[in-house]
Amino acid sequence: MSTIVAESTPVAPAQRIAPPQQSLSLLGAATALSACGGGGGGEAGGTTAQPDSVPAPAPAPVQAPISDAAAARFLAQAGFAASMADIASVKSGGYAAWLEQQFRASGSSSHVDWLLAKGYGAESYKYSFSGVDNSLWRKWLSSPDALRQRVVMALSEIFVVSMTGLPVAWGNFAAAAYVDMLEQRAFGSFRDLLEGVTLSCGMGVYLNMRGNKKEDGKGSAPDENYAREVMQLFTIGLHELNLDGTPVLGAGGQPKESYTLADITELARVFTGWDFDGRSETDPSFMRRPMSHNAGRFASGAKRVLQVDIPATADGPTALKIALDTLANHPNVGPFIGRQLIQRLVCSHPSPAYVRRVAGVFNNNGTGQRGDMKAVLAAVLLDEEARKVGSAPSSGRLREPLQRFIQWGRSFGLSSPTDLWNVGDTSNPATRLGQSPLRSPSVFNFFRPGYVPPNSQLGSNGITAPEFQLCNESTVAGYLNFMQGVVANGIGELKPVYTEELALVADAPALVERVALRLAGDGLSAATKATIATALATMKVDTEARQLNRVQAAVLLVMASPEYQIQK
Image (cartoon, rainbow, N blue to C red; front, side, top):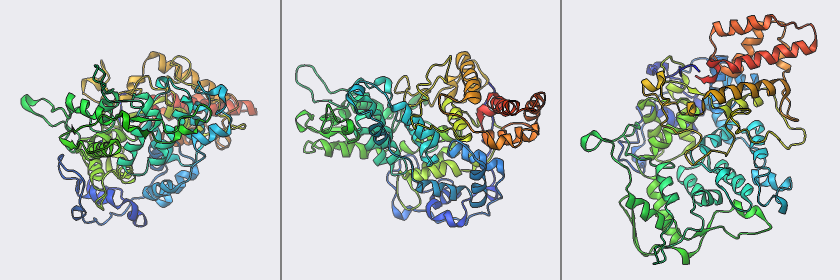
């Protein structure tokens, strides 16, 4: 695999791509805060922004014309795929207008509703995950709200729940309802998202908060699993952070820890008394309801979490609210979550300046609101480093196998005539993708956000490249073999449509240009495209079957190239 290349070098202010004027109403925060160098968020010790700290909007620079390649590149970051119609829409309306349209876009039926409609609520499916893979592929391959689905994929890899850790009746509905919750809260406030994650039945089972109860005086203590992970992985991380994501250093130049063992113990006591709301042996739809509280299992008494006192008079729901408010308002959250969203959507090793700008918008969306996910996502996707292709080895990201497969499916009209979407589990690294939705091996996701590939140029330079944790001899070969089959034959009843590409089949260079544009934006070099076109030109196209073979070869060769696999 090649090293990561692409965007890092900031552009001068006059070159920044700004939202068109008609889009400033929604996304003004991203533009204003970027122009102010991230303002409004203050330094790392800031909490909820106040209205009087709102920065004055900066005049929007004139937006440069958007090329086909730039539009396709944006669509790959903000969604999964780029049709020629989508490319034209971005070029005519601008990046911000496309985001606004997607923020308002309606999607397809919920995962729980789909499972029920397809009969997966029958008793025979009670102890299985039947239907979950199907519904996840249905949404990620076909739902029209591409931005929401892309963000849900990112959130599912930050706030991890895996089917490998849901040993409970109606686990299929616990998983489905969890993803539905991520969809519903993806564009709201971070605080609401955190509460949805915390009280979801799926997370309750996965990290043992469901059924957690007070100490019994006989040596039993509240389970600390969720208390630990909600701090380490979902909100503040292990170390105190500056606004730009760099660690705050303490004595001896060592990073300062952001919480203590006492914080875990106290927070575990807060997270007691929660369980399924109206559990049913015959109706799995209870899994879509947040967990409810049982006061008899709650650990009473005063608590202190992250230097915030929770009084002894606070009941379970009140204690939970104080704890979640404390976590959501911690100064680490903006840089910690912001950096991971940049990694999932744009580049693996964002600059501190990029992180600072996004964290600033997290702290203040321009109207005094903290944790506005729409504004944060806009800041991630419209940032100067996101929109400019550079050449620094710390830029870009390896497209994870799921992203490559979904992009192919959406690009070439994959559909399911029976609406069953039987793609199945793609976890096998030797024969499939080595990655499958909601099937992470642990709460730490398929890859760690701080992963640095050892014995590599990236490792020597200390470059984080999380997706390379999935890259090995087995997954490289497995991906190529799997894609060779599906590009040619589809998968089961799901068949690709190459009509647009077949119209260019007689002109090998034009065919390669079209496929490379839609899949890689401007990511493929002229030399690579010429090499592929030369190979295609040796293939006869005197029959319909041979014409299709040439198109399929073009798609496969582009998707096999290291330049494509690095999203720039």
